[in-house]
Image (cartoon, rainbow, N blue to C red; front, side, top):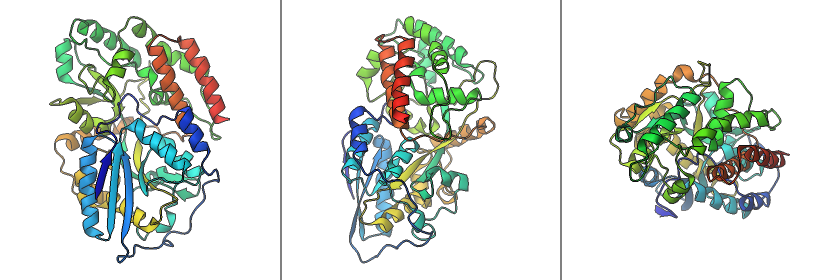
Length: 445
């Protein structure tokens, strides 16, 4: 096994989803544009030849904690498949997708790569991912996974990714930071407006510290939080044909939630956030709370050094008792260009199903997707807290994750960029709305 890394830190948690800038989007457009298609019947794929010397490349995004877990999993895989050498590499979130976009344009993606559902349709529809359907029942076993979870990896008639774990949104908070600021912790019954009021209180109380302490960041700058907000109100996010199902007024209302807090400098400053990258203010112990996916617990603990972090469900829409929460999953895909598709499928299968690998990763990628991977979980510490949180919000999981259109990464990149400009005071809320819709309509047309 060979491991390389461009950076040894995790992505800044405030950037929760794929970023696809103009240059990388152009590179992606240069790749093959033929549509996704099924690659054969289940069980029709070849199997691994144990006498063939094979080298596979495996890439993922994450921090040192995730890398250590992958390293252990790869060592176990190489013991079971001594003829296969896995060359592993990881980077931060932003660097990961920049590299993948460039490789996709040059038909040189890794044999196996960590995939995000926001990018899945883009890569699959350009024939850049291997349809894993022929390996079902052979090198790849998904019988221990619910059908609806398997479907998270499907695009049209093909299976282009295998879920690794389930996650849902959570409000993280650090009791030690809250105690230092001197305010009461947030509560599970908060509306979004209640949470903004709490942010303002925390920022005022933490202003005299060095460095200044805050309740949290301006959450309106993250597109997925807006998506969750729309779902909570019973609104569609995307139409069946991949267009926007919300209005400019919807976005304006979302941005208005934190307009006063932004104006009064009661959310974590954009300039300070840039200085701390790739850590977020929460991971650097300068904000008391942050929204993220619940599988970030292990990484937050590792990056912050906190003794304990707490998780609460996300706030509710004003006047509503339905949080409309949903689950999503981290995925593994194989490149269409791999010279060893059966070996790639075997590697994905091993990481997905091995009880030993399930124990290694625990809940760091979410609650494991298969029964076998969950079978040897040692439910204490982080893993116990993750499962307890998942159980606590089970009744709040009343929505399904929206189907993401091709071009979702471009929408999110534009939202993030404009959110940063809004945080710096370079644009107004109205200018954010106008510019984002112009870019979104262009990207989806």
